[in-house]
Image (tube, rainbow, N blue to C red; front, side):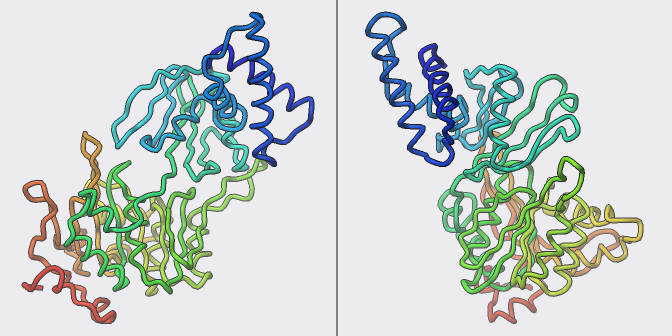
Amino acid sequence: MSEAVRVITESVRERVRRDGADLGVDSTLAERYVRDEVRAYSERALGGSVPLVSDEDQAAREVIAAITGFGVLQPYLDDPTIEEIWINSPTRVFVARSGVPELTATVLTEQGVRDLVERMLQSSGRRVDLSSPFVDASLPDGSRLHVAIPDVTQKHWAVNIRKFTRRLRDLGQLVQLGSLTLQSAEFLRMCVLADQNILVSGPTHAGKTTLLGALLSGARRDERIVSVEETFELDVSARDIVALQCRQPSVEGGGEITLRRLIKEALRMRPDRIVVGEVREAESLDLLIALNSGLPGMCSIHANSARDALAKLCTLPLLAGRNIDAAFVLPTVASCIDIVVHCDIDRAGRRRVVEILAPSGSTSGPVVEASPIFTIADGALTPTGGHPTKLAKFRGAGLDPAIVLGRGAA
């Protein structure tokens, strides 16, 4: 921030305090105040009392960002090529473009970082302090904010902003980008129409949430979808959708709404399909119970491979309590999960589906049996010749996966 912009910003803030104005109520009020103060500053600059402003329009934009937006981070939030922003320290501000991180020239102060976080949390009603050193929140534009503070972090506040973008809305767009082949996309579209329970797996930033949204675009138009997330991230354009998110405990320690609670509440909302943004812990048990009742569903999970995702889903429900036994969980996962889609991201930031797996419904010891339907061969997602063996849902929907996959041994 230049000295001129800093002076103008302080003048605007002083006028706002003096007038008792609420810039959040009237979006044009901030622009009017800034225009007035920029004009007044330029007049003083012509008299030689302060430095000249080389570009008044640019100065006005920077002041508006500082007053109503998120200061020096606002240009990154406005840049459509940037997908994520993170602050490791006031002098280490990073952004990611197309999955590739880069260090910016932006320099903040410790207080500047805290002021930014406070401003970001204003609309969410959430907080971060010594008693609650982590916070997840949604920004007004839908971007996801995560903050961790000392003494959980070593010295500085750590801030991550995963920007909300109008994500790829359907599987066809993923095909155009090379994340899927046309054949695999048509197979997945058929799986959605057949009410298959789909588990999307992959590492962080691999595009799991984007793929979930694209899969949901293939659902029937009259389908009622209820989504459950820690913070809102899914971008779904369905006609009949209810989106639920968790709530942190209040200052007094009460009022927390967990994923487990939300999944149970979702079942009371007459869903035709339930979607859990990500399962990490004991909520996986509640999801399995919901899927075991015949309700179609989707969810995502962090894993290194499709088979690892199945193994992890067999382990997480055990966190729900000592009375939960693997003898129940293992066959339930085998019977409930119909398709596993594994995403990956390479060093160049390229995101793509690298494996599609179909559990058979059976187990072999502690392992859920599954057959690969698509795998990477010669750098491309290629059909293996295998077919899903659980065909009841396909037949019930009047669909035949062999039409897409080709005739072969099922």
